[in-house]
Length: 215
Image 1 (cartoon, rainbow, N blue to C red):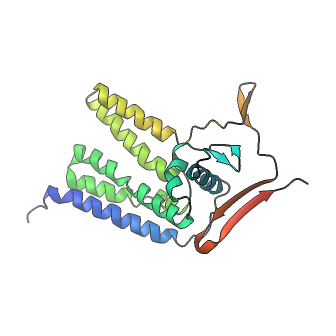
Image 2 (cartoon, rainbow, N blue to C red; image 1 turned 120 degrees about the vertical axis):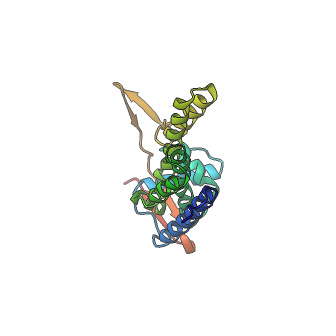
């Protein structure tokens, strides 16, 4: 029996990524509103204020829980449903660096199998939530691939690319709130003073909101 051509492996990979993104997007439709509090609400609000040109802020209070993830969400911050579709596409793309890395080690079809197994990870279901893991996972795997390439041939370009990707992946977790103050070697953040309100609009005009008021 003739072995399948390795030229077809990239097309198989593309089909796997598209199929995974579609399945994840459909699964995401079953969750109508954010449920991981307060992370999802903050990410959505930061994306909305970025889209509006107000920077990293929540109702006028400077705040950032992630630099990169809200920037990714900002273009579609008008729709909770479309944000989850974007998540599905982004996290499904994790299979691409897995394939590119594996192809250098075990060949095209075993690498495609590794990519397919990656798409079966339970963490793929994060696409149904507005959590920064959706962006961190593909960035982390890509950064690992870049580090491997830099070790394989330590040119200045490869090392710079690895550092840039590491910075992008870390940018999802490193944050410096503008209303933070340092005390005894630790950093504390002053919470927004009431009245304070966070609102996330869902499909069909529905929305979830949380508000704090002075007593």
